[in-house]
Length: 628
Image (cartoon, rainbow, N blue to C red; front, side, top):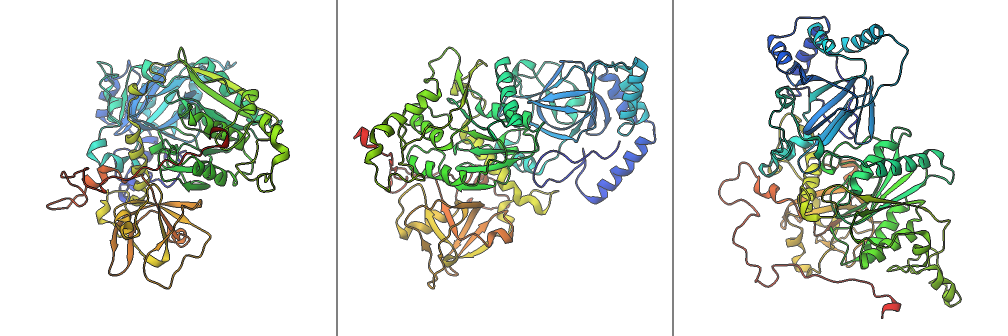
């Protein structure tokens, strides 16, 4: 079996072969085994036994952690778990991505926190080749991967219409770190509710647990048609690169549609930009962020397995914008200035589409001027008004006015009000956009009570996915956070601001200790001759370069102790720490190996009746003149 090609998964990863550690010694030993297999060495007896046990299913064990499976056209393998997929012959589709033979390997993540992924075999194109020629071609493709006995077993069940897949056990640093926390140790295991009575032991041995195909992520004909229309717009570029805004209420499939669309578009162009305007359910960053990213790799897993470095990011600091709508819009505007319209753009929005949420959505449309809007709704339930160009053009948002009002009051504008950059300026009608309406008809659409996992759990998992970057020092071992060496940051080298609450200056250090902080860069010179902390009186809209954990505050040396995966060259640019309502996952505090006695920062004795035990909520809704 030859060394598989580099995976399509982005970011730093350690290629750990199935069933082995990532050490050089083990990799060298495995390489020798691969050469022997390619030289047609007889397969081991345990592999031959597995051939007989799973012949009807089509899953054949090649070696420990590696198997081959055959799928007929339109046959699906729906599963929970994780694996590396290589298509050896034919073609398959996974979440909108078509994978052909002789392509790179892809890492698939299908945890129980989301609907399971499905690998669907596609129908082969008609060919003039004879059956014998097709079999010889397939055998040649298998030769570099499988031993002679394995090739014979596969070809015994081979038909010219089928696809041949190589599935390998996936050892991933991010997932391994998440699984090291007891609360999440089984998220990639079998789901008893959807697992068939008889499951394939070979697939289980590589971490793939087959389940009911009806539970899989499926796309309706309406969704497929909408995606094809948008892909065509991305390729044609008749009016420049399209800007696609996706909106709709909670739990209607916005994120799934975004991933599907990204995978479809990346089959035709090398990259696509993504603007995430939902701080509560971010797709590629930790929660509480507004970010712009350039996506070059397919998305074949949930957000916490797909953490990526943004092109530009603002740390909003809260998972809900309800208490500070103006700052959200300012953050979106700041991030959007980095978009040069050289690639298509997909915009992810929140599921808050009623009341102030609808007004906020109208503001975003006015601000971002999309060329296409995908409005997703719940079938057979009350939906919001269709967001037609005429409706949006005449509608007033929180901070922008409709076209009719602009015409009535254009003569009364002062110079300051008339500035094009101001949010308080009146909305100018654009060239319009195409509205695509989709009805979500999957079971449980719009019902937040039936979601497989609570949002706060997904946010914690996304943060653990980011924290796992600290494990880059030793891929073979999980190092507890309390065993990592933090950076020392002098008080007077960075400014500090608590975003979500008013905190007395004397209590700032208490807020900073054991907190999740945005590591930001502001343009102001904040260095002080005084050795004390530098406190900001207002929350800046600035670049967020990454995140860290304030492990401790040394009041004697006047330094913060910060854990962060950011490299030193990036840390030199950090001069501001932003503290929001996004807190470190509880599992991090509860899982502190080596601690004897009381666990730091963990207590069962807490009284919310004590003055100051909870944060004061501030309502910062803007009141427009029309509503006063």
